[in-house]
Image (cartoon, rainbow, N blue to C red; front, side, top):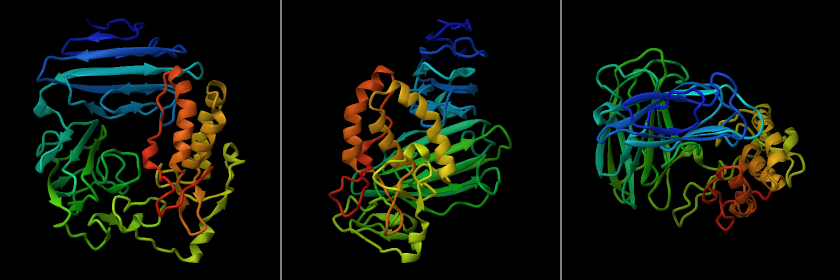
Length: 398
């Protein structure tokens, strides 16, 4: 079925290429809307999806209005994302709006492409290679490729770049490769972001998971990159000089030590470093109004987990959620404490910041998940990522 009407909300799309948009686009979408599109193309072809315009209530993590692609991507805000390579022949796309704050919505185009034209995907072998689309020819514009590499427990992943040539910028904001020391992005465990023509160093994960992102905008395109990975048993791995060796043999970047994460949590041996007392001055009084009245009054920035620079930026992020949360979620106070503990974390007297305790996250989830489900909202946190308080790592009870 071809979705041809601008007013339609959802449908099954089976043509090799097509487009769809939010209701009333480019006008404001209606409140309390839930649309589902199912895109199906004949295997082995894969779905490639491009959102050409986006004006949806934000910001990230998109709790109220959102465009969700069941390949693991959720979008909101006013910046159209790069092209999504889904690595699937069937893709579900959901658009949801709450009862307040409407935007202009979105319009998107999809097409069926052959596997060799795609990029990203799951990689599970002991060794493999990955490259930008069309390498060594120039990569296409507007690309978002995600490779998730998984090897056997007791192994780490060594990633080596053989060719590398991307658009050069000082801050790597337009075209870049970003390597994460985990199976997901957004948790702050970034091994590096690279652009330009200098080949990145060989990178080694701390465990059996690694995620590689390739992002390209609509500007300059270069020849891209070619990289290979290999699984290495922990007993055989050697940490590079800028990384610390955990008791298990895992490698942890020196910059992660004493940042509030227990990065050697999988090992029996803990490594605790006392920061100089001069770093205590990094604590600052909480100025974010929404986060007044917590069990703590001091915080520290930048927030490395969410890439928030200072309290003014944190306040702007929280302000957009406060009204909707207060109006729609009965457990607002419990959720407020948890969200504040994540966005405006407690400053530790020993230096650094404390994450909220896992028990707080689980308790809040039990109180709020049903209310969020009624609003077709998913629980936004993975509580298992927070410290449980029984390890040699302190945590906050906001």
